[in-house]
Length: 68
Image 1: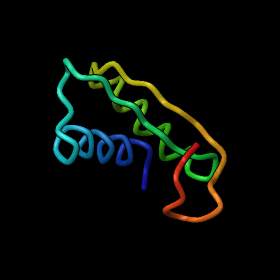
Image 2: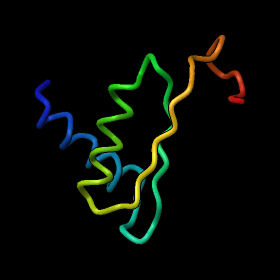
Image 3: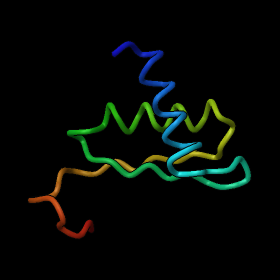
Image 4: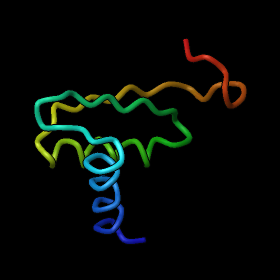
C-alpha cells in the first residue's frame, strides 16, 4: 500500500470509524512495534485540522495487559 493510500485510510478511520470532529482532541497511543501505524494516524489527524497528540510506549508483555 502506498503512503497516499495509508494516509487516506487513516483519515477514513478517524472521520468515519472514530467520528472525531474538528473541535475534539485526538490521542494516538501506540507502542514501538506499531509506531509506524501510530504516526500515520497522528499525521492524518493533523492534516484533518484536529488537535492531535501521540503517546509512545514500550510493548506490553501480552495483549490485554493494562498499560502503565
